[in-house]
Length: 356
Image 1 (cartoon, rainbow, N blue to C red):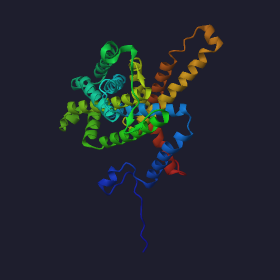
Image 2: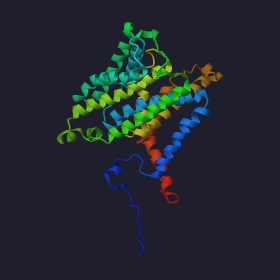
Image 3: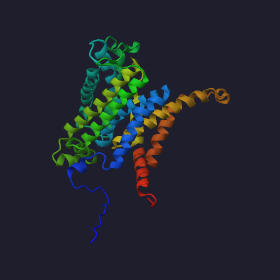
Image 4: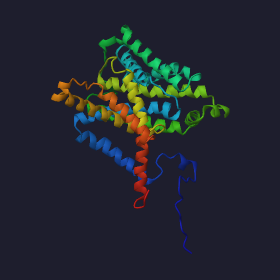
């Protein structure tokens, strides 16, 4: 008698190993392999230098956005100081490299650890505050760090900035967009895998429990202050790691980029990409970085149009207007962000030709 085999609906696993697998099917693993081949073989050869620069920027911002998503999307703690923590990582890397002569392979994780310590200090109010009050506390942290970076001239060189040496890995000197491309995207892959695995441990489950209902989590025996502080530390580590990479990539750093506007951009990446979703942070970083470049192009174009010049219209606030509009539209139309749109597209392909 012929035996029939049925494919069960939903996420059906017969072992813990199957449940913990990141890619559940051979097709998913094949798609990942194809994507990595295109990313590391095709793109560096055929992409223009400007395109590689944009991709490098996306990679660095994606690392920082993943860290903020762990704090905001998974733990439910709003932070408006992520841009300042990004700056702490950049300056920590610059000081370690120029004044102490520390090697590149030590500087990057050390900058992340230093930033994690600073982030946990500013995360201390999370033990007593939440919601809007915690948001204001992190905003104060943003302004405090900005003030220190600008005013502590003997350490940060103020507005003069710091010039970093070219990074070296063993005997290989990393210089140019293509060399940094491999460094940045290998780092992004490793940091993404690290974040995915954290979310599958007891720490990740505690973060989600605190986000959903902190009182219920505390009643279940979860020390919520400890895990909130740990979440601030992980988020800040990611920001510092990305900031250190950015400092080496830019060669020279000053205090201007690490303002409140950068923190708002990171928040926009998390909201637009999808809160509580690791790939969503990468989608959000891609969207915001490309939007920045498009707005820069259109702002210059609009400022050269005669009737706009004659009317005296100021195109400088266009970026803030479009960012705010994009956030509002995603919150209203697709609160789960680009990650949810990607999930719907994947499901449509899986179920084709049947209706979704």
